[in-house]
Image (cartoon, rainbow, N blue to C red; front, side):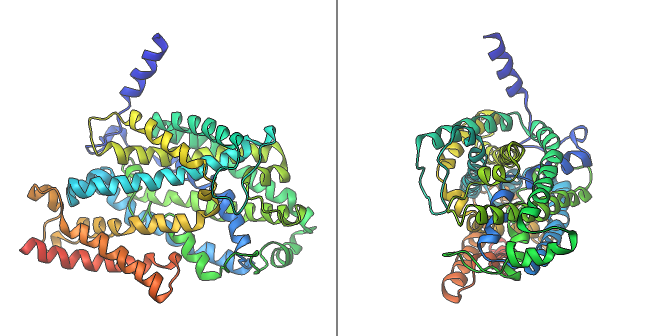
Length: 462
């Protein structure tokens, strides 16, 4: 009983400064962000996205050039958009949005945001579960599965979800510490696993790698039933797969702890180790799995890694799933907690973790991860455009920033119009013009900027 009281006391003592600016003595240095980004982005998603590029028939040259340019654009977005605003305001996305848009809009946004975070974290819990279930000879999800197909899968998901939720409940400090410990080891396993299997693919010397890559790994031919990915698909996916975090401003909640805005460049450890090295490494592992399993429909990162390098590969999948799910659950908890500041963040995170774990039981979260990640960023993108304009331009244009707070209103119609009209515009581009979801974020951002400026001028002057 005493231990239980002590645990609750520790959880209640966690202060994430949800409704105030971060005090100066709580700011963190480079190491916290290098570890957090490396751990979060060298993670469970990499064991899914890398193989999906193989499945979608990316060619070797398109993959390498698209990833390099797309990842550079992502790092610049984190540094010059998100980090600058985070250091300038020192508050969470949710608190800042409440001042701009009002409580009514923020309530709807936070529910949508938290739901999307939960589904992403759920996908990572599912990825970790595919490795945990290996010793029990658990039936793994297939590429075409939507619903859970056995009790063992559900049980394993709940065990992994419980561990993930407990870590997230202890706040940013524990999330960053966990990532700093796990990240260096995971990166080495990714690299070592890929190097270890290259001879089984026919790479006998350094000079033969590229020819094998073009002919055997990234052949440019998609698997049956999969669409074709080219250079522009890869570039925009690399840039926008984390659109919600940088252009959508979700990482204000993390980067508000940074001493300087330049710490936003620490995202490079994540995208170039995770979204470059790890995607390439996991693609190599999956191509070998396809060859040795003679085209099996099994799409489970655990068995793929285990078949390549044994226990170390399976363990890497487990840890990788956790290091993405932990900060994602942390963000989801903050989103829900901001609805009622009196709620304890750890209690909210516990409930969010339960919902996330239930969602993780559905394999479709993993099988359609590329499309989900693109949709997730697109939905949150217009609010990022609103925050950018509100922080940097409105006052210079003679308009009021933080309009809802200044006017004491619960709904800023400029923000509501911007979000609604932008998403309708993107939907029409997709359905009528035929532009794929991966490309909608760029024109959508400029449309959101235009709508917010025009509607703010009209509504504020009126």
